[in-house]
Length: 127
Image (cartoon, rainbow, N blue to C red; front, side):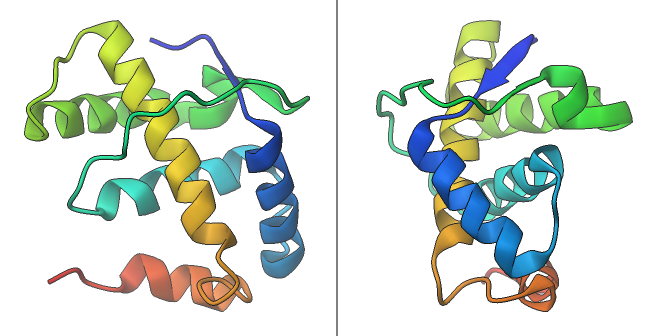
């Protein structure tokens, strides 16, 4: 399991915008939303190098809270569904890719203008 999560500077900047639009002030809560929004997509995220060059860092426990094992299991299940390995390294890589892709989705100006939009996004069904 991942011990520390460090975001890219680009992701940090996007989270700052999302925080101001939603009023959600905790990085870990926004990151949880980002993870599940990305995992909701049918396609796996593109494998790219993501720098860990920001000052936003949190432990896995802080990210997942009391449900941290559930988040890990969800990412692992998604790896299996996507035909990827379920070893620690692959799951950690896919977590990071999903997290950053989800932050990008949430930062899209037309996607989230307020907390109500975030809730609607969560309730929206995929065809």
